Amino acid sequence: ILTDEQPDRSRMPTRQNIMANLHWLAQGEGGPLPGDVLFFHFSGHGSQKEDPRGLEEDGMNETILPVDFQTAGMITDDEITQVAVTPLPEHAKLTAVMDCCHSGTGLDLPFLHTSRGWKLEANPWYHRSDVQLFS
Image 1 (cartoon, one colour):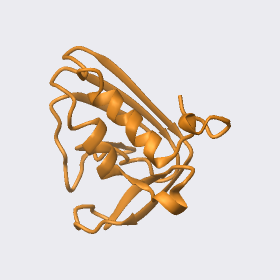
Image 2 (spheres, helix red, strand yellow; image 1 turned 180 degrees about the horizontal axis):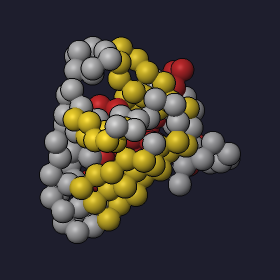
Image 3 (cartoon, helix red, strand yellow; image 1 turned 45 degrees about the vertical axis):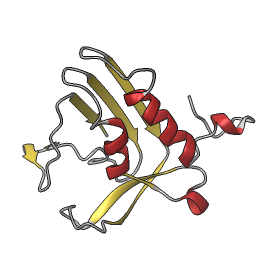
Image 4 (cartoon, one colour; image 1 turned 180 degrees about the vertical axis):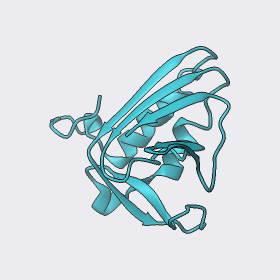
């Protein structure tokens, strides 16, 4: 657990620590196996920044803000997906809860549930695992 009220810097939600823990969740210690159930929770600040690849429908990547974002940078939805979603094996399950602004597409999942039902994203990233995001 990373929190900003830690005296130990190794337990602070810095960019490096968040990315290392996401890597551990999806790839560490031999990685998860089919049938494993994983959980990721982020409560903090979220934002957006321009998508340099032009893949986002609105032209913006969703981001989370680590405590050191002003010096280390924001973490984009593309980075989170690459580290914590794409490597998951088939039949692994990841449930993510993101309690921050701009988190609705924070994992770049292929489907988004709206008040009108399910919507296929303009740039769907399909994954072999079962991933759900609550935002």
